[in-house]
Image 1 (cartoon, helix red, strand yellow):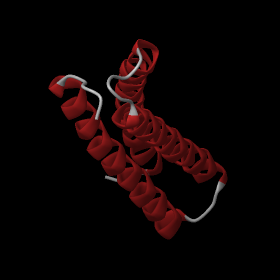
Image 2 (cartoon, rainbow, N blue to C red):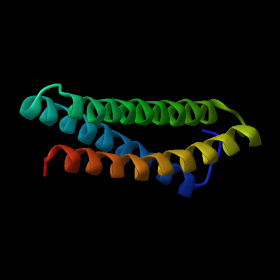
Image 3 (cartoon, helix red, strand yellow):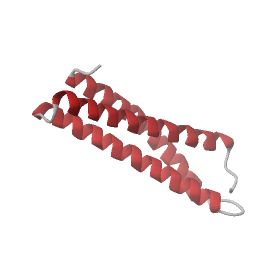
Image 4 (cartoon, rainbow, N blue to C red):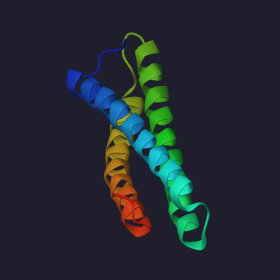
Length: 114
């Protein structure tokens, strides 16, 4: 692998885990809402928001994965633009994680789930 800092690599791997956990949380919440309340006017909004979260997390995961693979194949070093794009993608994913977690909590609160 072209050399990237251990900090960037560890951060990326940590974000992978967080993205997967958040996808799982969103899908579990979606399932709970459907099981307890079905599709109603109120739940449809929450269900759509949860699906949007899953899609954003999936896109972030895919983008990070693609960039990390590209960097790992680059020899003897990755170009600066790709590394900068990876760093931007990390920052974007971190922001998406925080806002998505808040949205999941809001969806639970709005539908009466704990």
